[in-house]
Structures are given as C-alpha cells and as structure tokens.
Length: 337
Image (cartoon, rainbow, N blue to C red; front, side):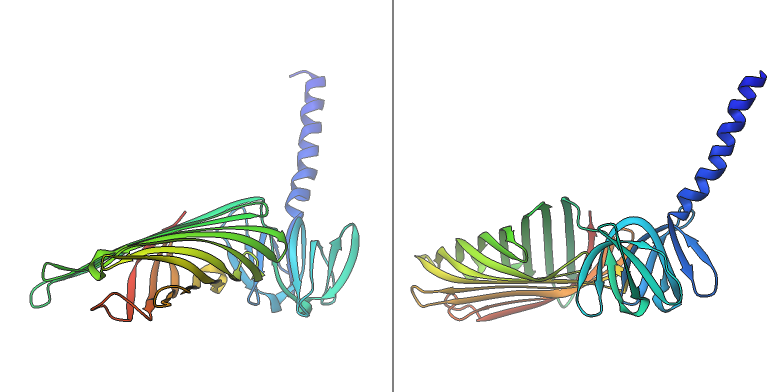
C-alpha cells in the first residue's frame, strides 16, 4: 500500500469515527439516573416512551424516569392542556424539554408532555382478517362460522373503508343464519376535522327471509379525535334503501348514522373497537335497523391476535317469524397486515 493510499484510508477511518457517534446521538433518551438510550423514539403514550434501538426490539420506559429527549425527527406532540404542535425534541435539563417548532425553540416541563407520535403518512393502509369458529358434536350438534375482513385505506385527505362479514350458523344440520354483509365508506376531509362522505351497503340472510337490502347515501361527519393511537368519528346523513323481505319489495329514503371508535391500549398490544350503524327508514313500516360490533384485539405474535367481540343486530320490524334482536359473543383469531 502506497503512502498516499494509506493517508486516504486513515482519513476515511477518522471521518467514520466522528460520524458514527453523531448519527447515534441524533436519537437519544436521557434518563434521570444518567443512562443514555440510543435508538428511534417511536411514540409517547399512556405515560410511557417507546424506543427502538438498533440492537434490540422496541421497548418502553416510564416517562417519570426520563430527563430529556433528543431526536431529529418530526413528531406530532400533544400537551396536557390539549394544545398540539409538530416539533423536534432538542434535549433539555432540570425537568424541562426543548421542542424545536418551525426553527424556534419552545421549552416545556416534562410533566406537560402528554403524547407524541410520528405524523401520519400521506399513504397508509391497515387490513384485518378475523376467523371465528365454534363446532359442537354429540348432544349439541352445531356449527358456527364467522369470517370478517376489513381494509382501511388513507391517501392524503381521502379515506376508504371496506368491510365484509360472512356468517354461517347450523344446528343439527339445519341452517339458522346465512348472513352476507358488505359495506363501503368514503370520506373526503375538506376542513379537518370535518369531512364529507359516501356510503354503500348490501346485506342478505335468506334464513330470516331477507332476500336483499342495499342502499346508498351521503354523509357529513367529524373526527372527535384522530391520531396513531385512537380514532373516534361520527357522521350523519341521508340515503336511499331498497329491500326484499319475505318476498315483498319496498324502497325509499332513509336517515343514516355512523359511529366508529378505535383505541390502542398498553402501547398498542391491546386494541378496543366499537362500530355502530343506524338506518331509519321513512317508508313502509318505518323500520329502524341498528348494528353494533364492540370488542378487543390482543396481540399474540407479531401481526397475529386473539379477538373477542359482541355483535348486536336490532330491527323494529323484522321479517315475519324473526326476532327483533340478534346478539353474538365471538371468540377467535385474526391477522393484521
């Protein structure tokens, strides 16, 4: 190796020695006991800070033990008083955290820091598949199968939600439920948190003489809160419904109401959800149709989770011979992708 080449190699090594500590120092959590944890700060939620080092899986530390945070990434930061900013964490001392907001520094008390998360990406998609089966033999011969699929797609100010439910119940070889339910919702966020929406749905269950029910409607809605850890939205509007029950066809205008609530708990290991749809028909017997689905998803392994949910359907004027309400407690497994 020539002397000139040796000089270049030495120069590169010197640069590397100085660069690597700088890159690791860009993401640091300083603890009150003097420890320094290097890694990507993922979020602050429920009094815990979640960090992902390069050498280990993501873990959490209590915010009460954190002295300050330093990161070059932008975060959506929420204070205890409800105010929100998009800022970088720029370190701090003596129980104070410095936030850099639009190149200006803002010093706050660590106790005033409620939540922080990375800003929502322009494109995001989350899908779920749930499979729930209960088979009984012997004295109780029954089969209960429920398949559920949903996809929540976001592109900028546009959101789309697809949901599909297929349920088959059988007792002693006789079908007691053959429900197929599909719904689609589109939201355009024209003035956050307000949005305009379009909704469409289809349902059939020949066992209770519902040959079909489909409808189309327009909505106006508002996000009560919407971040990476919780989403609560309500909407109302009007639509048109066509249906055939017990061989009789009818159609007309309807009032619509939608509610959707999702909340991550325990750092995202547990998710609570509650979905509600209400249709009030202003024709025929003025049937009111309520559908709810409430439950929990609990992470088992990566994207595999256990789920428990309570599904409740209610109609004021069902088909002759059918009950007004139908409730089902469901246990099963699912996957998120």
